Length: 191
Image (cartoon, rainbow, N blue to C red):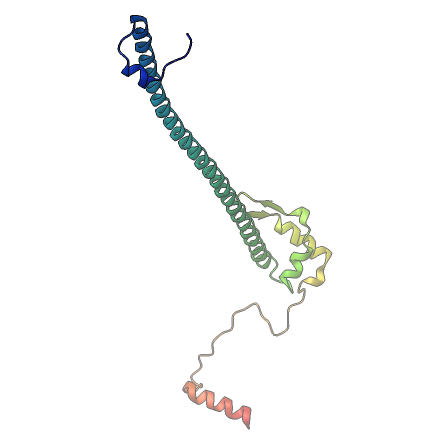
């Protein structure tokens, strides 16, 4: 065909021929179809944009949450590590105290318990970390006693006896109040 006639001119003209009317009907049908498709396309585009925005927001949220979980997980791991360190230190202190008490109980004649502990042969000591017990202390102290006897009292002091003091219950003792005894003692000191 040659030139298309604008829609306004076509509407005003009387029906010239049936082919032209058929073409006008097809053009009208195509324009309606194009308008409908354009409207559907705009609807789909807006749905696509909203879904795309929703997906991007969800992904950003997931990434943010994932990062937060990583940070929280790292913080918790650090707390657990710190608590484990504190527990180990507490267990070590408890074992040291237990060792001090056991050495003090076994080596009653030692000059200084810390000196004995510092020279204990460590290879004779067995530490059960699960039950928090130390064994082999007796053998280790006996070895220290034989190798370094100067760390122990070997003599008994002359004024020390192995007997308990006996209370004098003779009737000769005066019964005096504590205040009288205290004032006599203070008078003797300042006289």
